[in-house]
Length: 323
Image (cartoon, rainbow, N blue to C red; front, side):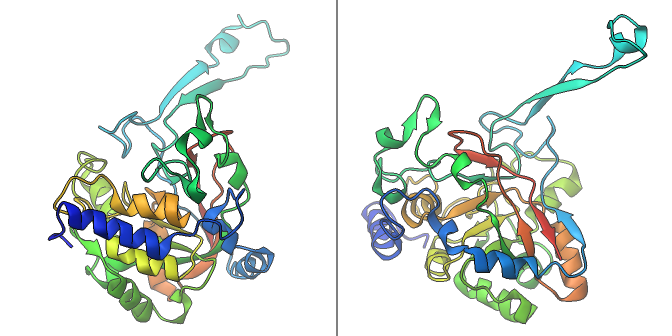
């Protein structure tokens, strides 16, 4: 797609809007987008996938030296409010030797493992379901589709597509655009448990997060080239009717993007405000991927609810996969 320049980019975006837009599909007041594909039956069937009890956290560590280094807002800042020193010294005034410790964290909501909320990206000043930006956003945040409205939404069958292992032999190089054909090839290679159906939450492993962590350097992870989903994969993302998709990269889509023209995040521009699809970023998939490769089972119960921050545009999460 790198030959698309100028007006051709506008044509590609317009074509994607026309083909994949889900506005009105779940009514004019919808605040769930593609999470609507998850119903009670889907959650019940997903719960039955927790057969062995093995659990995997898919969250990156929240630390000042984390993967958001160099990005707008940066990494979380953790500070102690009370270290217990006063109690230990007997100057706290608590009786019978009681002491306590307390702390606080300041963090951009998208600085660690998170879902992008439905108001994170607008397309021509229109957000999810065709709402104007001014209808949605206030100084207090997203008043229509804020994070609190999806508090119970991210519980479903999870499926790991280890494209890094199947296509890249372990890890994909930076700038690699993952196509629909490669997603389908990964499903075939991994077998029946990797089949993607309606309402699934799909996790795509590229290997980039592990590569950066392995060399002990996050420089460029947040802003440099990265493997990721191709703009052309939107057809599969929409047509498969998945509830959400997440990767182990900073921005889900390939960087640099595939258009030889000014364009910030074209896949985000169509996926979030037009499809209503939730995108998950910086999911740590390494331990889960190793286990899936060992037993050949790529499906699991996934509980990945974001914090219900009123008006939140980013949804910090500690996703738990249970096999």
